Amino acid sequence: MKVLVAVKRVIDYNVKIRVKADRTGVETANVKMSMNPFDEIGVEEALRLREAGKATEVIAVSLGAQQCQETIRTALAMGADRGILVQTDVELQPLAVAKLLKAVIDKEQPGLVILGKQAIDDDSNQTGQMLAALLGWSQGTFASKLAITDDGLEVTREVDGGLETVKLKTPAVITTDLRLNEPRYASLPNIMKAKKKPIDVIAPDALGVDPAPRLKVLKVEEPAKRQGGKKVASVQELVDKLQNEARVI
Amino acid sequence: MDFELSFEQQELVTALKRFVETELYPHEDLVERERGVPPDLAAEIKKKAIDNGFYAMNMPEELGGGGLDALTLSLAEKEIGKAGSGLGILIGRPTRILLACKDDQIEEYLMPSIRGERKNCFALTEPGAGSDARAITTRAVKDGDDFIVNGTKLYISAADISDFIILNTVSGVEETPRGPRKLFTTFLLDKNTPGVTVTPMLSICTHGYNPNTIYLEDVRIPKSKILGEEGKGFSIANEWLYAGRVMLSAHCVGRGERVMEMTADWAANRKAFGKAIGDFQGTGFKLADMATELRLADLMTLNCAWKMDQGTLTRQEASMCNVFASEMIFRLTDNAMQIFGGMSMMEDFPIQRYWRDARVERIWEGTSEIHRDIIARDILKPYRK
Ligand SMILES: Cc1cc2nc3c(=O)[nH]c(=O)nc-3n(C[C@H](O)[C@H](O)[C@H](O)COP(=O)(O)OP(=O)(O)OC[C@H]3O[C@@H](n4cnc5c(N)ncnc54)[C@H](O)[C@@H]3O)c2cc1C
Image 1: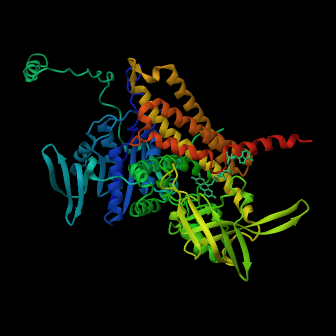
Image 2 (image 1 turned 120 degrees about the vertical axis):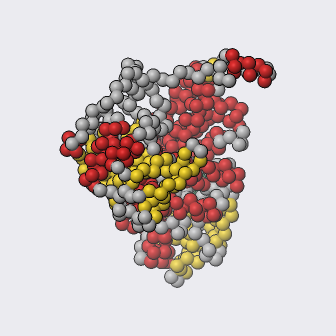
Image 3 (image 1 turned 120 degrees about the horizontal axis):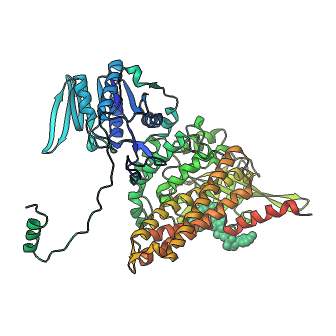
């Protein structure tokens, strides 16, 4: 079984995000970029499946500008076998990514697709679900545990009320949650091998998909500065303030 | 001039940074208190380093090492140097002097060192000979096919946790037109050889990477354990000496970056007289100087490492790098102490440890004075009439 993992290039989680002066987005020039942490977890899970003999090949797919190749290379340095870049300078929104991924999946025919539950830049949390719907495949989102069984998959999901375990038929789409695994270090031998592994570059046209955005961003703003807290003298005063000032009870 | 790091270099730095922060940092307080790494923990960390190909990155790939060039190695050393030395040495980088091993020595000393099975220390300094290394008096006297060795070695790092000693001795005297000259011979000496006694010394710096005294009493060493050639001991040391100086600089820069981040964070948020202390010029200028010198040491280190790869690094340049980086880390940690104020003196707060650890950088690998002496002599040499 082939496993396909989607990897997104995002601003590194350590970077302090700044909004551009013209409020069209956030500053990405001269900013350290990395693989979306949830996607690292996805790559790790795929590698573990391969090491356990449950998967034959791990393919890392990224979509976006040419620099996304670096993100794919990072996945290759972790141990993925090859990469695919759907290269475009168009701003990609979740639906476009899902459609493009579907087209890649139609060609590659993997038994399992793993995505992060969300990317830490837009926090959309949509792509995996949209992709499963477009493919007509089963989906196991927010996975904190994944087991391959004789007749498919068993996925433990992190839901509001606790943990939910579902059985899925393959092929399936999985999205990773934080606790699924602890991604490995890229080892020195794998880092050195990464450049020699193949990356196919495909244009959206060749996949017959129009990636144009459907949503328009009007403006991007920083969250309001947090106000300092207030001290109250008594419970009486607290209840009064909650009722009459904050109006939350 | 291209200052861009390659993909491999960036990935290695990222991976090592995470390894050091995740596997080493959490144990630093314990190692400081215990003055050593508990053996189980040491074995566990070493195994992880080996599994990830981080062990022996400095050794040739054909022999199972990482095969890094000097520039990439300096980037790696910078990350490893951020952690306390007692933990850092678990990501082993066996000395390249071992590449002089031949015949049976290869399987007995070189290969197990690369695989992480055996560890060495390097014994040169003696009670009567430090900077003046040629003054050593540890004698190796021929006895048939063996040598009988007597003497004392001082401050030998990690001898307590090593399996064998790279031992420097005097094996004879040669008459030259300028008078008698000592002949030096280097041996590979198993620590469990009868007559070898290692006793730990208590030092204020680099806990876990501890200095030791080695007493050698009628130690019998077979001729087959000579590293390099009899009577030519120091000639194998030169390439290795320069590399050591550049890698020491890389450690200073790495540690400097770590302390700089902590200090900037503190100066931006600690308030006095109603404002952040970093906003007082007295603090702000300190930060500016610390960051500027740090940057300079970083560039010198990269430049020297690059020159090592080109085969053009001179002894003067290696010394310049060493003396600047080691004095930089001392000034930087000293300023950090000042900026942290009273907090800096507290043992359960790490700033004092960086400051103590920084002090030795001006002494081992050649004192600041010795380096300046080398630089000055090389400056004057072409002008002497
Ligand atoms: C923690 C620690 C670990 C060490 N680990 C090792 C090890 O693993 N193996 C090993 O072999 N050695 C080791 N050393 C020894 C180290 O290399 C020596 O301490 C160093 O070379 C200085 O020698 P010394 O201490 O004898 O000082 P000295 O040589 O006595 O120097 C004392 C002072 O005199 C100055 N001085 C000496 N000669 C001159 C000159 N020509 N011009 C101007 N000033 C001069 C020095 O700069 C210094 O300020 C270690 C030392 C320490 C502190």
